[in-house]
Length: 184
Image 1 (cartoon, rainbow, N blue to C red):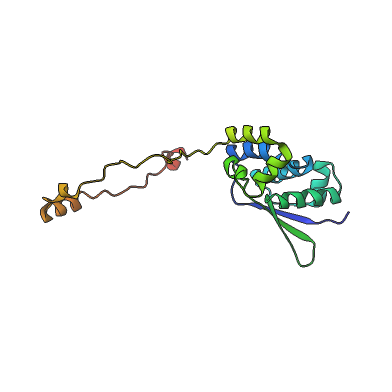
Image 2 (cartoon, one colour):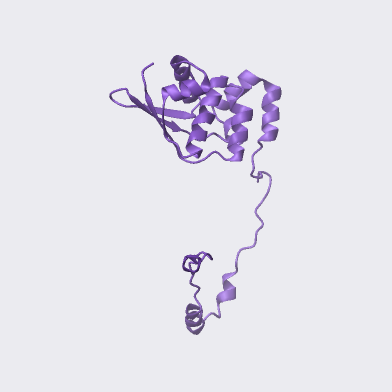
């Protein structure tokens, strides 16, 4: 097996909502090896590792280089991974892409339709309940909020403005409460 160096990067860690989306929405559509490969790469990054080789992944995931390549390509198709190959073909940069949160996944023009097709109506409806839009719909509502009345400021004078300027707030940067000199 020829050694191919894998350099892994990710813009941000996976949060709990993304992990739920990955487990509930992506997992039933992915092959188990692809699912495990993504989680392993994310775990490596969380432990501050970045560079591994294909042998490490094959040994850890109990797969062949061909199966690993197929898993990588499936992750690319699901927009979870971007892969860049060096000119000499000895190294890959694997960029983990953000997991789409449930609501965005279900409303995505491709992923939502694919999920409905593969999993069926009942699973899709259940997922909609699990990942409903976190914002309230304003449809059928009118904005009746009161705005500030500028007439209230008609008596404001330059004297009051100069007084206001003397009270302007400055922020202070607090230092940590641990005193290193006392400790030493």
